[in-house]
Amino acid sequence: MGTIRRLIKTAGWATIIAAFGAALGHSAPETLDDNSWISSLKAIRVMAMARQAPRPIRTAILKQGPAARPTPRPTPTAEPAPVPPQPVETSVDLAAAFNKHLKTRLTFQANGWNIWASAGLNPDNPDGDYLILRVEDKASIVFDIRQMITLTEQLKPFAVNGVPLVLVGDPVFTRASPERDSTLTVALNVARPDLQFTEPKAGKALLPAFSMQDFRKALWDAGTAVNLGGEEIRFYYGDQVSKGERRLQTGPGKGFAFIRKLGEEKFSHAVLLNEDKLPAGGSVTIVLAKDLTLRLVRTDENTLKISKETTSK
Image 1 (tube, rainbow, N blue to C red):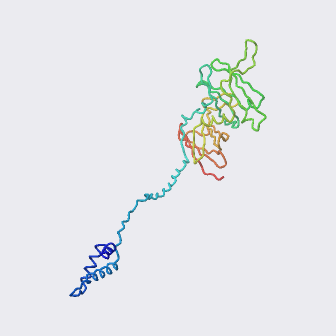
Image 2 (tube, one colour):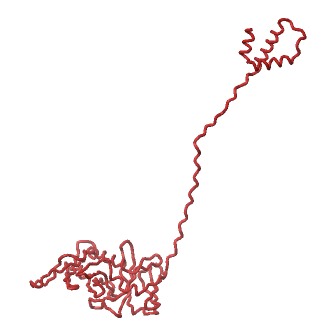
């Protein structure tokens, strides 16, 4: 019995039965003695021990790993937008441009009247700088700027709408550029004629002091923009400073002017042309610089065509 227990414990019932069936399949003796069944069991045990025990089935468990990030597609490089061709011709409405430059951002009031500071046109003296004080649309007062900034101090009295005023020049000689650093301002004239004090005397400033650079920048901003082939130009059309006089010449004798931008807040001198050189239906060529020539065609009284001509540097 001990042998049977060891057999069952070692091989298991399924293996014993299978081995027993296999043993019966062999030729068996027709007669059995008392020990024949023991011999059969031993044979079964030998056969059972020879069989390999079935291995347990292992189930693989797959764990979900981190989701793979999708590979981003390369961002397509945007092609630069095509640069539109720069215009080489434009038209100017002369009626809209007439005396437009006389109203700059340099302005003040006197007794309720608006007054603007601007520059005058004078083709006979293109290097002259004339300060024009435009009083509403009623009158204009002209001063020679160079006289104001080349003397130690210059006071020019005048009156607007009954208000005594004085133009004050404050020249600077200690710096590299007197024209750039010298300033002008307009103040109340506080002279007392009743006390026989007739010399002008500056009181409260009505127009804050401005330099010649401020003056040119304000004049540039007040012009009519003309962009030709990438060139920044301002166009001016209006009454001129009368020759030999300090007043605007109204009626016939108007003038054209062009100023070219040379850099940040840097401008060329004005190139001026008398209007009688360009009547309706006429054309003329003017040179702004060695590398910039303009052709002007006046198609009618109020239209001026401006084109850029190719010139070698």
